[in-house]
Image (cartoon, rainbow, N blue to C red; front, side, top):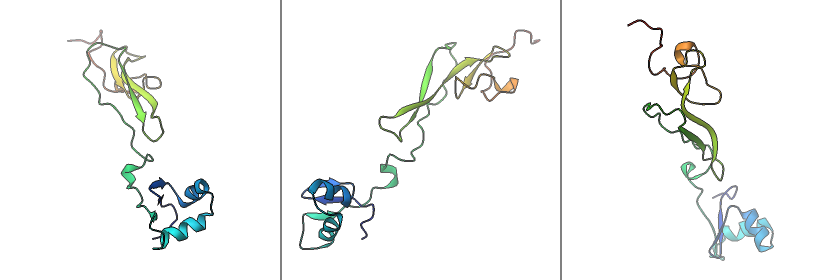
Length: 135
């Protein structure tokens, strides 16, 4: 097993790399690597790399599902980015009024998407009808 990027355990303490273990123990990284490869040092051992789903990198954004329209235009839900610690808010979703036709529509970004799909914007399908539509 190579040592590049692999976590190492020394005396029951896990380190993300041999270099960080060496810095903490006050020795050279090559010494930690050699001891982890040697059977003469059973307290030094390589740990398996984490599976990609266990890492906090390249995880998908946590987006809430659109909810049915209840007339509440103030409700907002946060889209979270789990790739940073603590997770941060990327944008907010919710219902907004279209700037052109004034009908509410579900917006994937309540700050930048303000026109509904019917009016040529990137928002969702408008809820309700226009006041001047014929029956």
